[in-house]
Length: 306
Image (cartoon, rainbow, N blue to C red; front, side, top):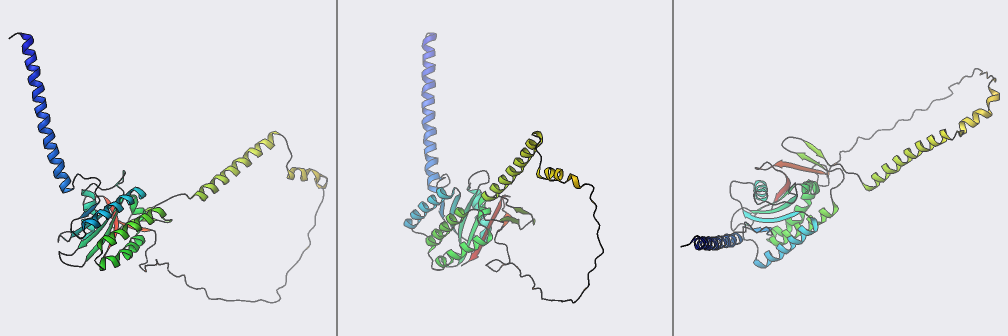
């Protein structure tokens, strides 16, 4: 066999081996993808996780579409989860860990919100609803707003309308994101006591600052221009007209005041009333209580039994 023919055989064997290897690899990849789709692990678009099986297939399909619209409208990640109490995690722990371990969230801060329906056990009608927030959603959904969300979903949960409760949650999320971060909002770390105040400049505050700075700069420029043009100010002009009175002298006489009568009026000073929120908890309406999950990420949120 000549050297040229041997080179051709080697090339043919190499091409054949490459084709066989690619076929095996693509088959294994397709198998992994099919299993991933069945388990939902690699389905990045999925945001409804009905682990407790509380919804029909039709309800689940409609709710998945509503979640997709909510995510698009708000620019935040939004998820709904149903599960049974596993006996080792509270509703808060389950919601926070589910959010972190499934890679939910958008942007550098992994901003988003998760609504958990945490049933006590299979066949029971009681449980706990919990709202877990992360990133910018901590600022938007304050403690007071989360309490109002819990008020809105309570009736649906008591009537076993779990899809309706999730729909109410999505409406509230869109509403509050549209309203934005309220004035005076601050994060309060319940574990360390640290406070992080949200600072923002309103459009009218920026306009006022611009007008003030423009006025100061304009007055300085006019003053410099006046000095270089040797123009007399009103005060200088008045002083020059009164220069002839420089030698004038003034004499002041003695005068006294006599007290004739005195009146004293007294009035009680009312005590200042404490400023409570509408919920009666005494918390500020702009407060967002935060804590750390098992992964170390900061979360906000709140829950309630139903």
